[in-house]
Image (cartoon, rainbow, N blue to C red; front, side, top):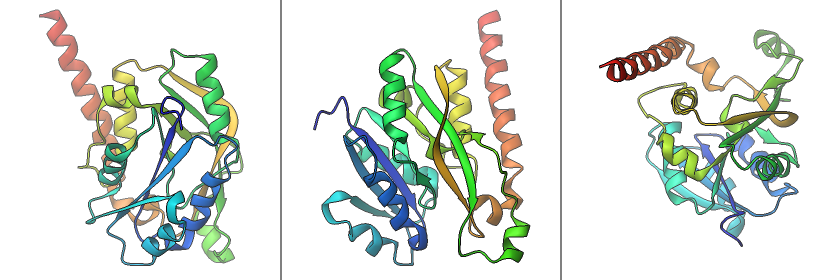
Length: 234
């Protein structure tokens, strides 16, 4: 396996045994085959460990005490061997040509640092109609500004730095904002690459009280930009 072609797929999971198997299978079904799968169990108390370990040598499984998805992603990156980093939330799914399309985009545009694709959201099949009515599911494709839709050069990720672990939600938004501050080159493809599962345990549903953190993330970015400008002016 050529390290320069290897994509390290990091799947953080916390009590996600219901969906984890399908997520892993969507990675194993990729038409692009130079991959490694790293599952970081963020202190699950359900059967997530058993699900991940049932794939034997196809999946590298690691456990950490519950520390949040940002810490789990950071741990996965420390363990990763590839020159490309991809994330897949344990309840999401990839289309089979997701990585092939993104690697092809990098090959055609070697100066780019991040390649994203489109996302289609769907109600998880176990939801009843009453629950579905409470969780809005946009019918159209949406630009994939979520971890499950990106592919990142490892070198570019290192330039930005690890995920900040002080955010209950929004650690990827915070990372991406920092990437834009460094003028990393990002490409948004028109292709559908990821299916985002909507269900009652989505972090955004469970932690609505923390939505204000997005405002703090943007404010922190503005403060950094203002400080940088003042430094240049002086």
